[in-house]
Amino acid sequence: MIKFFICLCLMLFCRHQLLAQDNLSWRETDPYAVAYMDSVSKYAALFSGNRQAPFLISTTNHRYFIEEEYTKGRLSFCGIVYPDISLRWDLYQDEMMIYSPNNFNVVLKSEYIDFVEIYGYHIIHLHPDGLSGCPPAGLYIRLYSGEYLLLEKLNAVLFDKQESNTISHYFALTKFFYLQKDGIYFKIKNRRTLLKTLDTHRKEMKRFIEANKFKYRHHAEKMVLEVVKEHEKLNRL
Image 1: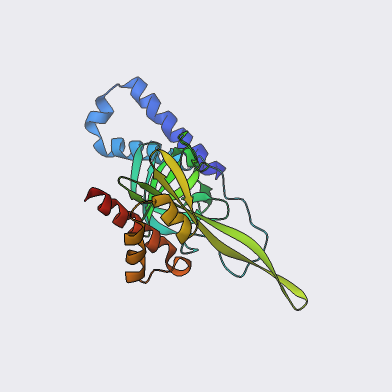
Image 2: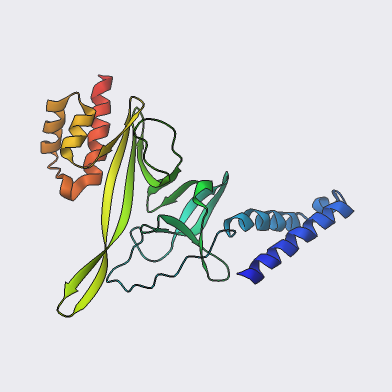
């Protein structure tokens, strides 16, 4: 890791030296060098994070979003979009990671993440906006953005299980939803709080849920998303 960053620093230093010696000539005559050096400087910011801390507890399952392995995705970091980069979301530490060229897991600085797109989901780093009920800063799935803003918060919680004379450790996934409505964030944790938060069109919403055979325990994400979209549609009638 240290050698990698030293090389990057040396390359960037050489770039500035070249610019000082000959203002535009090398840029005019060697476009490939320009593209390469610009690429190096853009990617250097990504790898300035810390290495992932080791996790010393053996568990029966993993703590990552959907899969333990890295997946290709789209990342916007400090306003720069990286269209094809290996990413992994640690739900236990709430950290987004990238795989560095020298084979290290590097934790991205969350406050600089604009968005991440993996597995068809749009993930943002939420900066508290001062609205009532605003959830804490962190990584959230943005499920919907229209009249309402719907966010999903995922956490991997570590549990112990006694088996005969041994103790095993495993992660369980918890999920909560936050609905921004009328300038207030509401925490959604079951069907009752969902209908109470939406407030109007209660009968229509119940019929919609029953017609689609939604059960919060089994279809929480799909149910909340579809009900919110249906409620917004009814509001426009």
